[in-house]
Length: 119
Image 1 (cartoon, helix red, strand yellow):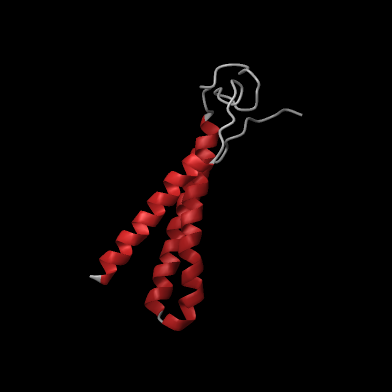
Image 2: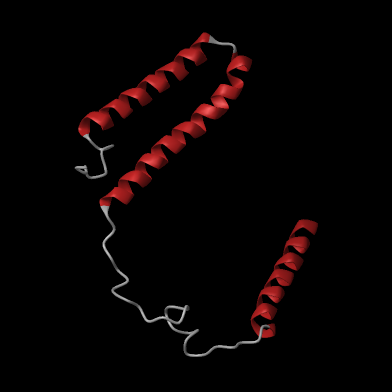
């Protein structure tokens, strides 16, 4: 019962502070601040530009390798505590699959994202 009372009091306080924050702040809005671009400049062109596929590839590759690093670091920190060959071979299999995936991406050309320049 006490938990629900504390929860109710907490919600009332949070709601009151949230509503007071709207009423207590002075509003100084003019036409320029209320415009879509708050810096005062008119837009130079269309705001809906095409995004180049290179940014998507870089983001996807970063996400993949970042998740793999998130898996590798904790395993490295506990590998001596496990003291098991099964854990070692599972981790080695994971690294081999990771290496084959990287080689496959390299062969398919997905890592070659920048255009070649003739200097």
